[in-house]
Length: 64
Image 1 (tube, helix red, strand yellow):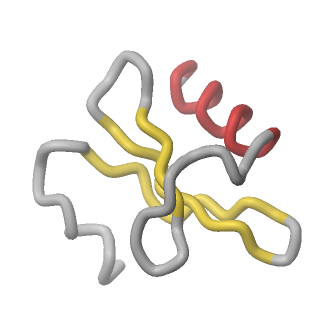
Image 2 (tube, one colour; image 1 turned 90 degrees about the horizontal axis):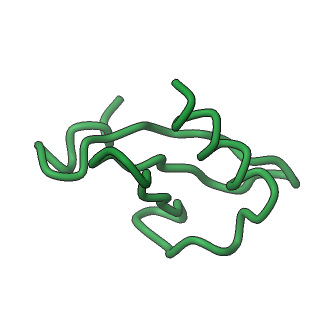
């Protein structure tokens, strides 16, 4: 949970830093775990779309 909190804090502070991903989203790779925080910027806010495993079923979150 601490790693997730850290990711959200960093993304909220500097949302445009991490690479573009799919469908207008960006992804932040966790430092200690093989997970991505998928997010997008909307109306001046950061919206977390998914937390996905970096090596398992990469597209599973798209249809949710």
